[in-house]
Figure (cartoon, rainbow, N blue to C red):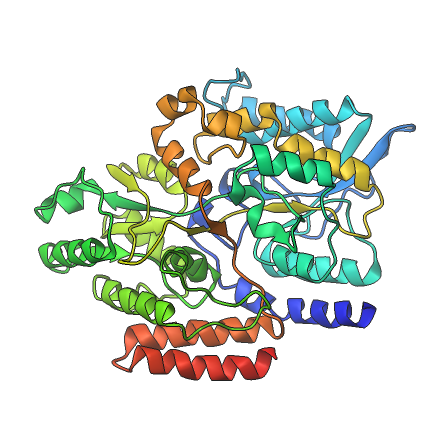
Length: 480
């Protein structure tokens, strides 16, 4: 068993080069902690709170930072004063009343967490291991050395850690509570063999967004939500023709990196396709996947040449922010960012294929887990339980950049009325939601083969089914 875990960990390290291609796009970035653009100042990747003095008689847990809620590194209670000064020096009010807008989200989040944990005689020391490549490398080394924080955090790598037996399953009573009271997007991607291994306090899923001004200029109803793939094809074509090279129809980012896979992965799921089977073996060449790639090919024609598959994610979203593309499949941060850039935004569920069903893929989800080698497992699970408490989830709702995962808040009439766009996002979180799979072997190479095949199918006149068949054969050789 130990040798199998070591082999699997080596494979996990090999995926980091693919993860590093996910940059750009501000808080929409998939290769950075969700909300990193608004998080507090954190120390460089790899710095820890190891020098923090712990309190005698109190259980101390070490927790890895994630950008949306980070306020620094070290003993949590010692970080508040500096963060408060940072806000007040910038003229930002520290006042927050539940149910009202919040301007100091990271600070309020950590204060709530601290108070809830202190009531249980638990204190927190935070560490910053970075994100993407640096994070996975340090986590892998930590697992091998059996020297790992009590709570680790990550995105696409976390289901793989669970499959490798490196994470502690949630206690049965806690798992039952989560299944009953928490949106599936927060935990379903971290369910392996009927056990839950991780939770995200504010995950994202994708919706369809559109620039009403551009849609109207194409002679289309800017207030009408499209519901089918054919309507999406027709509308992006109409906008592109109306734009005459000044603006385009757009659709979805589809580069051969995780930023692309996470976004058009929702289309794959809607159409009944998948990237891999339940054993982590490639499932590239299904008819459903070929149909989805055919849609991507049509959407590519409604973009500036090369933009849709550009590995620089930031270039794609810059085009959206500048009003150069009309339709976009993306995460919930798009609502607030579009308000900031002055885009009159439409929002709806992602359109369905002829035989499709609503489905989605988590994006920007920072999953928190307890490693099997954690020193304070009971206290670590108390921390995760606080993440889906009513106080924390009301704060998430008040931020209006993500949806709460607690059903009591997300399904309330008050939330629907105060946050209509985010309620649409909450509904999308509550359906059939998955994460990206980890392939059984050579994960990075398998993803590379998939990504290259999709780009070839989009950018050339080759037979899409034949291209996927070839990628399937090659991927089978490296994953079996």
